[in-house]
Image (cartoon, rainbow, N blue to C red):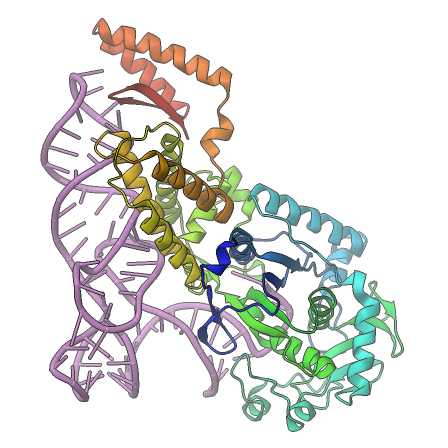
Length: 493
RNA sequence: GGUGUCGUGGCCGAGUGGCUUAGGCAAUGGUCUGCAAAACCAUGUACAGCGGUUCGAAUCCGCUCGACACCUCCA
């Protein structure tokens, strides 16, 4: 029996601004599209927050037993730098600065992106399509929009006619809560450089100027597609005209997602997405993390400790844990203190998971495992409330420690449920890794075991100087000895 | 200027009309220890301000102050 039949998931839908019961279009199957990165530079931690959250969404849906097709694109065609005719795309600009081919830039940062995801233990999406791999489909979609009368060509470029779309029943502005009548008066003028009929109109195809390297042949000009188009094309190609979940960062809500809806709806006549999900921004020192302002930290810099923000290096799982201790819809402020606190909590959790393997069952359970388990599911079912979910995991931690200290007991049946459930939640759903375990090995176990033995002999001889030396010097290299009633154990940081 | 989000204890962050007002970190006391650490037990401090609705509001409404984001490429 699939877990999802017993667990009714609720998702906060950005479109309706309400939590709604999640009902997939096709029972048992979920189609999810998430806007991926533009690969013109390294992904920073803010980007990672979004992908990490949707990684957990993906993991949880799989855990519930859904068959999920998760599509996350790579934007490698470059976006317009601005709305002026002379706009060159970002990837081409970077290439010129670095005197390399645009596709070389794309390749370098795509590899970097994948390396980061790998280090942070992301599950790969089902399909990771690229914009440049779908130029033909994008041209077809533009033709279709022109045929339906909602796009016009000017000087080799094609624009979507937002006002006409809305006059004829369209709902441009529905996602972002903008009224087009207001927007007309409030959009900043762009020096009259534009070919557009109205400033709200957005480009579907842009004619490339002479210096523009990334270009494709089209019925209108040698040029390149507008940046909103690729997501409409790739989502409908792989997930259908209508699909379940579309995710992305809050900053993409307008205009990117708004434009996607207009494009897709023009072609299909239906709302493309049932549940829109937006992750909020990650702040650094209370300011938005963004490459353009220099206020950012790279995922690799956290792992190596080579940065000006953190006091030391932190593992990928600590960052993951930190992210999951906050709700995805809220702004999250990244700081050294917060990360230090998360690291300790994470270690506490991992040590309980480790000692869970060692505890013995008893005759009765002083811990209601099944109620606990359901509380965990309830939290996740409530719009992926990972902070509450984690607070329940600490409920299990407390009980595991009590049982471990012989102050509580658990039946064999409950113990097996607890093991199975906690492991699934921690490793499968949250995607955490046990850092201590991966660093450990039989040889280290043997060496430290020998030192523990020598130290215990010293302690028997009341040679405190020697026993403390062993303890302190091991601690200095990151191995902590723990004296318990059952003898001495150790853990590594 | 327009659109939107938000202001919770020393810090990070849940909750969203009454119920035990999460959880993590830090702090204090205790158990344990040769002393510690770890673990466990116990404890304190809070809902930006003002006004309103209500039997009752941190939670709803209004205003004020403050923060942030989007409106231009951005996860």
